[in-house]
Image 1: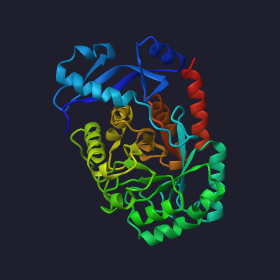
Image 2: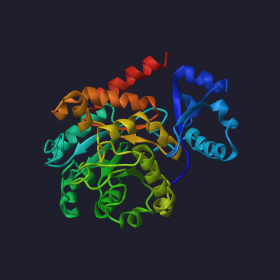
Image 3: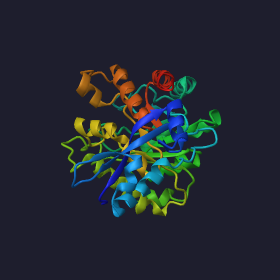
Image 4: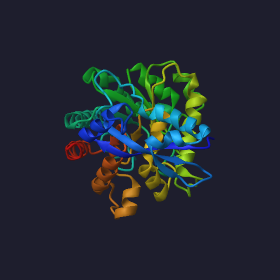
Length: 353
């Protein structure tokens, strides 16, 4: 557990960001010169946080300055692109495909292969860069299924996906190493494990040698228990410590350092936890890896707005997407690809003037 944490804040976009960076009055976020910051928030478990201008970092005491400067190096470093076609200079959209009978929002809609591929084609045509395919529901209260049942649900889509869409990134949403390996055999590009590779202790050893991206997702408890009174000492810093420990210890075994950080909105968090994580999400840039967020149709939108039907939560989804986009998040896992893409395009035009 570290003594202090560094969060980039006070962001500038577009031409304004480029001019400030050129004048050395701001720093680029993740190597993106169209997104800059000129202040940092220094957080601690013992003391009240404080916000300072980047020019005042040199005035800090020696030990604290060293911590902050090391964090700044990670915050400003350019993130490696997913591949030559998918670059983090623009936000990436991960379209959701649930091949399940019981997912919270769209269970049963696409669990026939022809319906699945129709939906995939629609999401790609509307702007999805990545398709995230899942065969097991991890909604609050859901229970485990056997790996063979999960693979039966996935097989027809996964085995044909790259033949149909060789240039589209394929992500597999699974907690089970048996399914991970089958997905990798079929040229999947991303393993998205909502348990943070904690569900099965064999997962890390099974996939550590493969050159695929891994989403390091946070979840407190299991899908069946995670929303039963979740508690943290400090949700923001507790999650940071979780990710840092994973990266320094468990993930040291991985040959390819292709990691994506996902704070797991709605996975073992109450409304206040979720809002804090979204509000301060730029803290996680100091881990040095791309950030992914999944707020699409989540329960926190209902808790704020009263939209009980998950399909009526598009407005809340867009609000959370655009706010976290302004904080430098790079990947957005969503159901409504068309609406999110349109919102991003308009948002970018407005802030780039």
